[in-house]
Length: 217
Ligand code: SF4
Ligand code: SF4
View 1 (cartoon, rainbow, N blue to C red):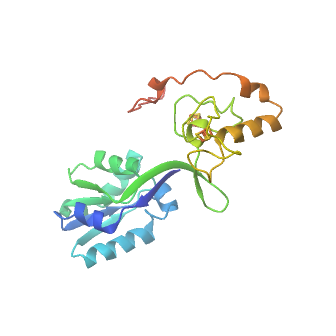
View 2 (view 1 turned 180 degrees about the horizontal axis):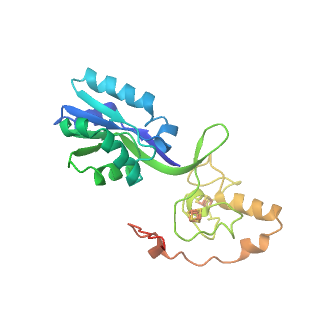
View 3 (view 1 turned 45 degrees about the vertical axis):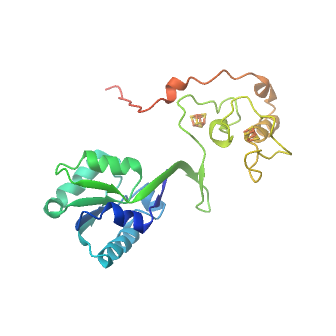
């Protein structure tokens, strides 16, 4: 799940200041779950923009705007309205925004309505937790299923650092030290041998951007 939040309205209005006729695109997946890209949010955005003198020509909510085929399907249905538009405001994550741009055959201005924050899991109460930084070299097998790259403030592979205090992180005293959590987890599973193994330095080439992956046919 990609977590995003709506940009402040003033910022959106500033980016739209050269354009009057706007088409809004949402996201039926992650951004809808984050309550920034679903139907209620698009309707609210439409109302706010109209109050600021904009003409909202139409809206659509692709099931997942990060998938080209989903954007193309929605754009085909709305082509008449899109031809009149000057700009598209996208209420989705940065992936959705760029996918909309990539699949807009009309060359319209495609503008972000959201800031993308992190990839997360969702607990039973609906809270979002960042758990993975997509490092390209997963070490969860030797860290008891707890990610040190993401949960340790310094991303240490062989923690804890000298600043750990009573199980808390020196960078954020409200946060448990990731390496204490890893130790406890491995201790409970009788796997402390793994904790004592020196983990070799990460291959940072694996996290250089941009990534591209082509699946074998
Ligand atoms: S080690 Fe952490 S950041 Fe890397 S892939 Fe595994 S969970 Fe993600
Ligand atoms: S105290 Fe623990 S979580 Fe915080 S930076 Fe040091 S090793 Fe990482």
